[in-house]
Length: 301
Ligand SMILES: [Fe+2]
Image (cartoon, rainbow, N blue to C red; front, side):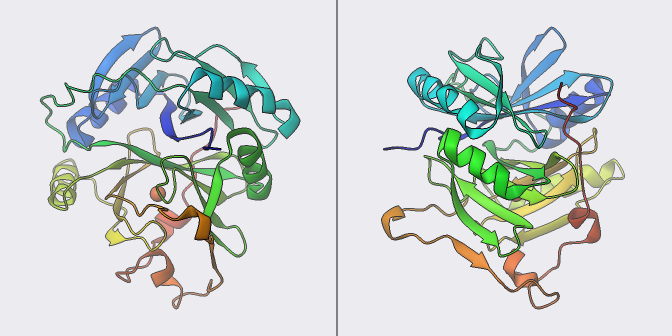
């Protein structure tokens, strides 16, 4: 049976500086605004209706992580599994009218996910004018959870997300969906629920130069990279968005082509500096700013 969750669907973020957040996403990263509705601004890197959503709010926090399923039947199947996995259904209506079906649920650890059908996609009009770099697509997100084993079990049970790689102590672990890229979701062990970063895909390496030059003109800088992650084999760099969340920009990831014979890799070498190449095969270690970064999840009722 194919996996219920296929890909990362969208990331919804609360921001207390929505105008700055939108300008940053459009003029630096290079997304476009597709719609302003209520207290939300929808943004996309292509023809899709919403990949990143900013919510005008009093705080800076993660609102919801959207996980894409391919059909309303798959969303309904996922919804039927939520309570059995120990999670709480918040809504069985899609959160945005650009998707046909969605189920939003909260976990005991304080995370909120929506499994939803794909957002509308204007496939033959993917390009637009932008002052920013212009990534291709939303790629993955790394979520902070106090209990990665519990979060893993919930997402496996509800969405059939599967592990591709982990550190032996679960400080970091990575999970794939139906599109078979090495990870659509990463779990970071932390004291409180949050988001570590969300990621958009860069097609060409000179995009990292353009991004760093653009940031430097505003007195900003890359936090880490460019480098090449061993988990996923993708190039990467990171910077902070205006609400204080890390954005990753990343090259194409490895895919799990032969799942039948695939064994998730367990990283047992956790001691620095020998383990640096486990995260960056080019050898530059992750700085403290990246390793210690947290960005909270909103408080769930
Ligand atoms: Fe990442």
